[in-house]
Length: 365
Image 1 (cartoon, rainbow, N blue to C red):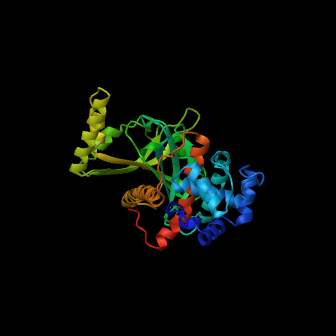
Image 2: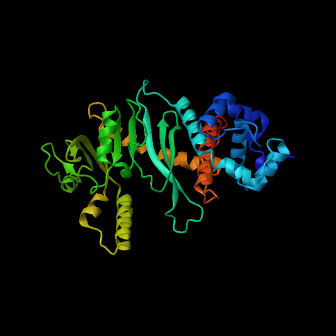
Image 3: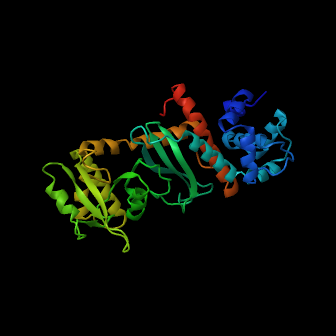
């Protein structure tokens, strides 16, 4: 009898064959395994397909190496010790990453029929044994609309910061991101490759300039716009000394009173943690949602820009869905050669399971 924790549909024979077919077939899976040195010779494990099944069984089964090895023996899949299984798993990271890349490539939508929207964000899980939460595995992602699918996933450790140019550009896309991605030099590079951007901005996190490359007093402009509660005008963002300022469009909308009060309270709390007092400028900026975009006023109205940015919540739901559907959590192993395959297996599985969840009406909540 197959243990309940191993009765995952992708690990039963019929569904396992479906999984391999989705990954390009046994020959494709095996070729990538050999190229990435995950499967060099048949010893204890007969094929790369069997090794992938073992890898997913361990990583998705949430049990130890010994129990996984015992399951493989009982299934007639492989006969190996937990130590030998550990050695095999440590070499699978590049292979899993390439399988993920293949799935993303085959499902990537095009921008030909209207504009492709790609929302950038990331999530993190703590490394095993992390005490203060500063040792992390980061998952960097792009979520595509209207397909409602991840079309880019990359795994790094805590040193891999959020970058708006991390994701390869699809010409014609609209790239949406929060204030962490207000990286002016990188935004210029993304635009040069044929994308438009829409990014939230913090009032202190950019060098605001006018058309003459002179300082632009953003706070004064926001204060003046309080009466209308809305702002839409050209602005330039300073880049490094060798590059001219980046011509952009500034769009801002004033928040409702309750949201302003909440933002100010949060700003005061953050300042207090650093033994400071929130500045008048910070409290004024708390009144506004500030956006910068390369989208033209002729093609996209102020209201269009605001509606586009509101779509950013979709990736938050997508991450919630990822964690609920496949149980993504901190890997049990401290060894990065084992922790990384553990996480990559979960990312691979979400790309396989996501379309089925939609087909059968699985809620992201």
